[in-house]
Image 1 (spheres, one colour):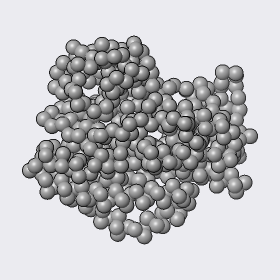
Image 2 (cartoon, helix red, strand yellow):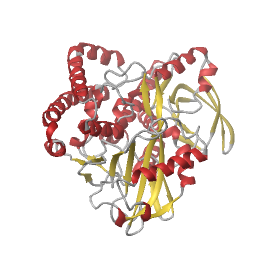
Image 3 (tube, helix red, strand yellow):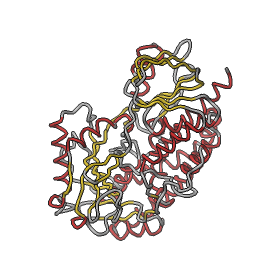
Image 4 (cartoon, rainbow, N blue to C red):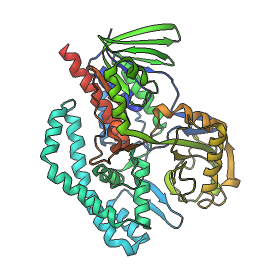
Length: 485
């Protein structure tokens, strides 16, 4: 008998399991696949998810949260500060987003001098609004589980919230039409936000994401695999369990939580007081079909539904064909062709020069990620091969000799990994009716007692940091429920 069962392969589920076990709950994390966050082939190593992990530097919030849950190893899996934090590359512009605010603004003004007034006014609003969001996040960390108190505090601040929101609307409206600065802002948010913000006013959470480069961005050695391994080690050391490679057959939630699964050692039944489920779990309909009240969750999830799915093409490239000052993380804004199938942004994750654990000497590993309007799980191999070819075609205007410099490419493996990883990938979400703050897009509470949600969708406007916070939230609710029993 467990206090809490957690189902999910995403980082939110792992954080929830670590927090629950740290708080003394008897915990088990069920991951139906043990797929790593990276894969190697042909002498290269590629990340499955190329979205950077923000807040992972010394003294930064995400790292401190994780440190409070489990001691970091002697050699923390954090490497050097990135400066610029990343680049945004348009057909006629390349902008470095530096970690110093004034330097970043000066870079924008240098590229778009005729928009200087708009740029400076916009970043003044960003700075003011980001401080407000930062206060909210800090309060959530300190008051885990007390949703009523946090909601009442936000209501008290409503005039201030509305004022900040209106300021972003005004700047957003001024930048309508053919405006390259707007393209840069949209590309920045395409990299960091899990909300699909096309054609919409920016929520207040966007200001927080736009301020993240000023806080400093750190590349993590070992990538997400190192962090997931560390999280799972912490779960076990706190007395919890991690079950990989099993298949969940049935879930019951009344009168108690019962999970039937098929594991490597045969069928197993798990029982618990609480259940935490990732919103990205592909078998979530097991719950919906099992209980009529839980079917309401399907309707609620539909109000903030996935609208774009990552597809990554992995390549090994000769270093000589890449620009000397290319950033390890970049966003390319391509021409809008095939817009009914593929978003216009290409997210590039490139290994650093001399990073021999990622690529042979004189070569670099390159992951080019695009967002599709349909999941790779629903597209045929031929359709995905056509999209992969389109990625290379779209890179030609930015890197004229890249095609000739390809040393490794395996489209079939890229397709396979993109399909396998959708349950843990950084999706884009569309909110019907728009998003006001973006800090909380869905509640972790469900219509069933002792059943809670976790996952990026709950705090989609906060990107990677929202994933961490949603895991903490769910664990806190489960812990409070356990104490009442």
